[in-house]
Structures are given as C-alpha cells and as structure tokens.
Image 1 (tube, rainbow, N blue to C red):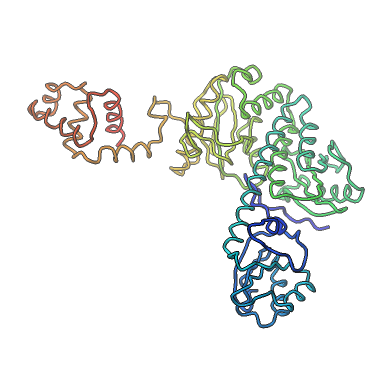
Image 2 (image 1 turned 180 degrees about the vertical axis):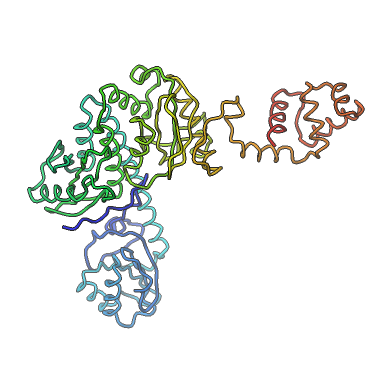
Length: 499
C-alpha cells in the first residue's frame, strides 16, 4: 500500500462538495433525475454548448447544456465521463422539447447521473443554488473544525493530556487514533476498534514516517475499508500519530494537525510537571479564560508574547518554531477567531489576531531572535495578569513586521502613539491636513505647541500677532474644526507630528 501525501494543510478547510441529491431536493428548481445515482458529489458547476466539452472540464463538475451541438449523444456522454464530470444537466427548450432518449440510454450505460432542467429554471439559478449549498457546507465544516480545535485544546489541559487528546481526536473524527512508538508499538489509543487488517495497515503506514532526517512528515492511504493517515510528531522521539476513519472530510487534516502540535508538545522529552501545568494554563488563556485565573499556574512573569506567521506549511511547523525559541508554550490555530485589540476592532485592526497566527509565550529573559521562514512580532515584557495587553502588542508588532518585510519587530513602548500603526496614522494625517498650505500648517503647529498663545506664536514665527490670528482662523475654516475644542487640538497635534 504505497502512501500518498495528504492535502496541503491549511488554517481553514476547503469548501466541501455538495451531493446532487441536495440540488434535487430543492423544489424551486424543479430538477428531475432521469438516469444514474443521486448521491454523487458535486465540486462545481460548468455550462458548455461545445460539441466536445472534454478539453474544458476539470472533473467533479455538474455539466449543464441545452444540446445546441448535440449530434451524437453516445459519443458525447463517453467524452463527458472520460473528462470526469460528476453529472450532466440537460435543459429542455429552446433546442429540445424533451431530453433525447439516446442521451438517457447512454447515461444509463455509463452510470452518469442525468438531470432534466425544466424550461422555467435558468441555468444560472441552478448554479447559484449549488454555490449557496457549498457555502452552507463550508460554514458547517468551519464550525466543526473550530469546535474540534477547542475540544483538543481543552483535552490538552487535563491531568492525563495525551490519552485525553487522542480521545478527543477519535471522537471528533469518528474513528480511531493511535500513538505509535518509534518501534511501531501502540503507546496509547482511543476510539472504536477497527478490523485487524486496518490496524496492520495503519501500523505499516506509520512505519513509513519514522524519525529519519528529511523523511516524509505525513502520509495517507486505505486499508480494511477505512481511510488511513499518519503524522510524525515533533520532539525527536520518533513518535507517530495514526488515524483511521470511515470517511475523510475537508477539515479532518486541519483537525489532525492541531492534535499533532499538541501531542508533540505533550510528549517532548525533558518535560517537567510544571511545564505541563503551564501548557494547560496557556491553552485556557487562549480560549478566553481571565488572566487572573491562570496567572498562578503560569507564574508571575514577566513574559514576552510572540506572534508569528510563516513556516513550511506542515502541521509541525509551530512546534519547530517553539523549539527554536526555547519554549513549550505555543498555540497554533487554537483561537476561535480574531482577538480584537479594542471594542469594535475587526480582523484587520492593528491589534487583532488573525487566523493562522502562531502564538508563543516566553520568559522575558529568553532572547527572541529572527527565525528563517517566519515573520515575528514580540511584545514588551508583561506580567501574567497583563498577557491580554501583551497579546495585542505582539499582534501590532507582527503587522508592522509584515508591512516593512522585517523578520522581527518588537513592540515600541513610547506612549499612545505606539498603539497606532505609523503608516496608517501618516496616511490619515495627510488626508486630514490636506487643505492647509505649508505656511498654515506650520503656524498651526507652533500655535498648538505654545498652548494657543498669539503673542508667543508671533515671536516664534517672526510675524505680526494679527497675522497669526488670521492664519489660525483660516485653518479653522479650511479644516471645518472648532480649534477651541481640546479633542480637536489633540487630534491636530497628533496629525501634525505624524505626517
């Protein structure tokens, strides 16, 4: 059984296919199955009136046609099947009043589902319905992955974390999860029993990985009627995670990747009980627990929060980064969504945590250095009770690092100005002050710096005090701002210093 590499890992699963039966169940479309099974998966939809659509098909699509150039139904169906299309939808009128019987017979011979589209249903309505069903399926899959990530993270914080993580993984995937030792023996297992043939095939698949330098990190295959996958754990112990399931969903690889990261940390050598407790505390913190609740387990600090993006795309990249920085306290894709930096902040706000970000926690005495293939943002040292603020600082630092293409950016502790991205602030300042000439802007800057004193501003600029009054009045008119308002003065001062 040669192993095949699983799909590329991702922080979110791809859109799952939609069963043809789901389209047929839509009463508003009025579709009717004339031949073939109704349980085939549809990955996309394509409309073509070519006599031979083969060159334009990718496979897995619902091909829609009105038969404009249908001259040889048997040959047409052969080419559609050869291209790998999932189903054929035939629209009656304006070319044909009914679906040609030769087409129905050809589809029956090849087992290709054939759907009749009534005259009242445009092809675009069928396509739109399929995309909506796919969007609903994707949302369902994202929710399933998110719930599984939370379940795995919570399991990692339990007193016996390794069996708990295996149990949570087996439950979420509806199969069996096995932790194999370097010699191929079962170290721990959870979930329902599988046939002996599947168990042997899973052990053989895990043996393909092993601790060899440069060897594959994951592999997949089939055995005993089940879908099999194996993942090498980090930590250098030669451990492997094996998973056997009846089906493989689009998000299963992502869920297994989270389990691999957690198990790599939990089985790493030289782990003390205090480190395990800290891991659990970090997981609870990232899942929304108040900092005060976990501060006792983490220790008083100070701590440095690091946010990172990049890596080589494998589920083990986060564990490798944590090892390079010398900390077991890491979380990759554990967050249920962006953590806003303030009220109303969205996923693109300067302090938001975006999906796919790896978060690490280091003692402030540990050096944070640039790592190849990664972009890092580091917070200022913070106490355990202030980790939420450190999290926001690291998020902003990471955004600055990505904007400047720097490998590592540290939080700048220089007051409120550090809380705003410099490039964004400068762009806003230029827009705000655009109506002012350079002379007016300079007069306004000096006047604000001297607390609105006409005489002192006149002396500083070597102009008459009446000229100062005229210029400030002109600034107020052009900006349409009340310069007696302290909030307006503060905003203009900040803009003048930032532009």
